[in-house]
Image (cartoon, rainbow over all chains, first blue to last red; front, side, top):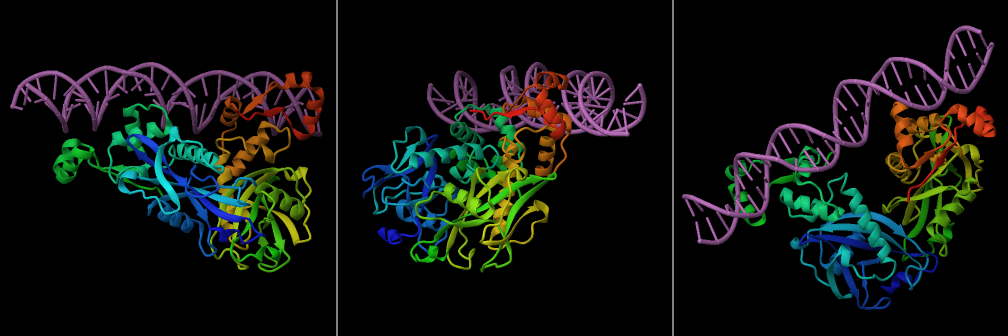
Length: 228
Length: 228
DNA sequence: TTACTTTGTGTCATAATTACGCAAAGTAGA
DNA sequence: TCTACTTTGCGTAATTATGACACAAAGTAA
């Protein structure tokens, strides 16, 4: 890790990741308990330094893989943080990203860099090392505003999910209560989602296997459609 | 400048600036004609490398000052660009920013790094060096969407300005025509702006000096108010 | 003073949002 | 399989926001 500091001319470049997950009707972030100084034994966002030949998304994926065991997840660049004192080891500029995962579909594993990796509901996040409180806050803000106009957030659910689950997810992320029936209409009217088999009995006849599966997971069959 | 490349472990860090100005009812960008390779004699966005002790905004201001002569202008971080081949000199990651200026209030001067500095209306921008076409496009997009929900864009006008000027600015940036009367109502209803002296005769009586000034610059007295 | 341009205000039709009612479909226990 | 209960799908009415346009008051320049 320290080889990133051999250079004295340039600041070091890092990425930090705000990984959101949705579990038990709670929005959570994935935090890492650091094994080494600085901020040893503190909770921080997963992050790491850029190798010369990597591009930012590759770094994100590498860190995600090695530090948390997650792969192939939704990733988006957030903001670059460059406060001179943000990292006690020296001048480090971090290009923060945020990620969305469905925790049930992935096993989270602490890499050998960390004591522990754990999901924290966003309203019980402890104080974080570095400037990660700030990064986390900004990511949460971004998620809240983005979900209003873009169908991000489906990434947090199973491949198929019920209207009710989607509804709860929105209420949870936005922290408000939304009328179930108005929400339903809005989602179905929107261009983002194509709903098929909205009739329960139709679903029962046309997709009996899916219907049976639904009996456990309460799933309807919505498909995500990103407009051009 | 080449000292930024002494490091081989870390990518170099740079900023690029998309400087928007509004002049003659046209939205323009400030472009620089390069004196040196790469892209010698091509038009590019102003940009430059980060010194170790600087933070990003400082770099932006320094570059703005030395390359274009502009100072104290509105600046906002846009996005970080990191395509491996974006700079032929080596691995350079650029944190792009965009800026808003009122060209009439500033004199633009080419620094000694450039052959020329010039405003280009956004619809006649030539092909740019590096990946600056992409950066420029993204900045324009950001400006268009931001202006819809946040009172950015006042930075492009004089300290005081008429409703008509503001109206034209919006039509110009968004590239659509907006009903003058509906626009007016929306602006006045919004929390962003507090209008005083909306009656012309009232203005004449209460602010005769301002009124006289208006006769030249067609100014009403609107004040910008950023909500908390 | 007159003819013309710019600015301020209102009105009406249409569309979007919100707040509910209610019945059909599904579920679980006896 | 009957019953009581929960979940889901659809509708309707009140409120609010938006878009299109008319018109008169104020300003301007000859």
